[in-house]
Image 1 (cartoon, rainbow, N blue to C red):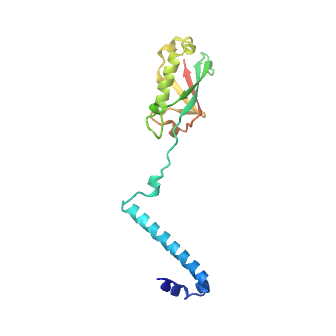
Image 2 (cartoon, rainbow, N blue to C red):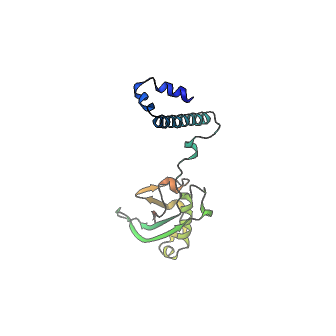
Image 3 (cartoon, rainbow, N blue to C red):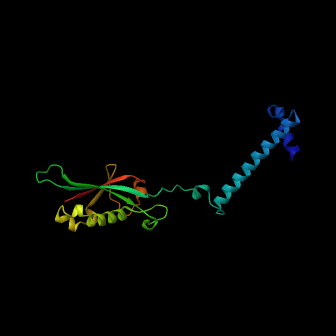
Length: 178
């Protein structure tokens, strides 16, 4: 096989110069064998993926968002004014919420906005800081909590936090209108 390759290289003046000495001929042959090996390998991988013998690299190395392990939530309890002006903030409190493996709905994606909403509602209902504000706080429902992340409202409860753009350590703003 070497003699056939060397004969093909000797036909053209550019490749004939590669065969002048035995060391240059050896180096040329090594590069040709490497090229042929890589080309054959690529053809086998593509054909195997096409016929379903094994998965292509794009299916193996899919990009998975990193789940959120903890967030800060700034709760703002607001009361609308009768004259139509902007609401007045009555209380503001920041909670640090950490998520453990038992809180994840999916191992790779973490927890959903619905879980954060339920956890925060429970914390607000148990808090003595908020219970003294208004009787409406005793009948607070989860849908009354409006979440904002970087001035964008978050309202997809079934969506994972990482898919909503919330990363570990980010701060969400939760507004409660009375």
